[in-house]
Image (cartoon, rainbow, N blue to C red):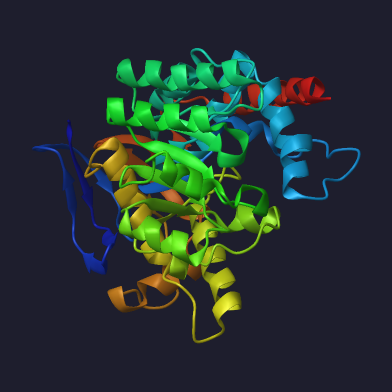
Amino acid sequence: MTGLSIAGGTVVTLDPPAAERRDLVLGGEPRRTLDASGCLVLPGLAIAHTHLYSALARGMPVPAEPPRSFREILEKVWWRLDAALDEKLLEASAELALLDAALSGVTAVIDHHESPSFIDGSLDVLARAARSAGVKAALCYGATDRHGAQGAREGLAECERAIRAGLPAMVGLHAGFTVSDETLRTAADLAKRTGAWLHVHVAEALCDAGSFERLEKADAVGPKTILVHGVHLSAAERERATSAGTWIVHNPRSNMQNAVGYADPKTLGPRVALGTDGMDADLFMEARVAHVRAREAYGPEGGIDAIALLASSGRLADLALGERPGDWIVLDYDPPTPLSAANLAGHVLFGLGVHHVRDVVVNGEIVVKNRQHVRLDAARIRARAREEAARLWRRMA
């Protein structure tokens, strides 16, 4: 790794919160210097759960008959969208999502993918887009029986192919209520045989409230399991997940948008991370919403530590993708009040935003400089996305 010195910034770590004035040296003898004078320097952010395939959904036409339940939201919107994806649509969506992630200060994502009309090779498309964007990505295909047992087998086969090909891949399941017991057991066995992580939506809505028990019966709950949402996990299930060392990813904006309830992260144990569920790559906004939603739930003297959720997301990404000591972001942030470890949370939650991200460094290499991606043609990617989004919407109709 080429040596890089980030000089003159206030370097902040989130776990535990700390702020101090010092320079940051990445790699060996620095050959380049990134001037961060007057700026804030944070570790690269990590999204613990997202859907790169959903980037072309923004602004798409709403269903003629509005969905009346979470299941109808899936049936009328998301299951129609993923079924309409082909290779070119997926490529355009992934390029756009990962460009926005980099520009938002995100250096790692844990993705959950589905494109039932294009399964074989779909994770390669995502991996190529991630490499081009300079964003680290843990990938999986969310196997499901909603297109039949053969579709489920093909989804798990794509996970296994990617794992054995050396991609940073996991075993994926869509959600318990869309997979058979056989598919669930096969996924759990594949994760054990390959030593891979298992990534699955669980108890997001009442229609999936029994999925945790089924995962337990399949011996699929453990320290390398990522359970997404967990809104309707029972108190006993939350305790068992905690004792098993399982990770749970909180996605407050998505839960509110889908009106599925509140995940109550205070009760989910110590391994709770933060995801955006494909809405965008704005972790600053996600943390802010997590904070204010908890204040609403617990009252003015309650709440949660949303900064700890950001830090946990980084730890989960380190476990899934390897340590990331060379991932840092520079924010052009001139605090209107003093900044210290004691009030860092207030600055992160109510001062910082993606518009402050100036530079992004991944593995000691500059990926974004002066708010411009140095590897990608952002105008070309966005123009292509507009064309492909229109085609996707026609295919959905």
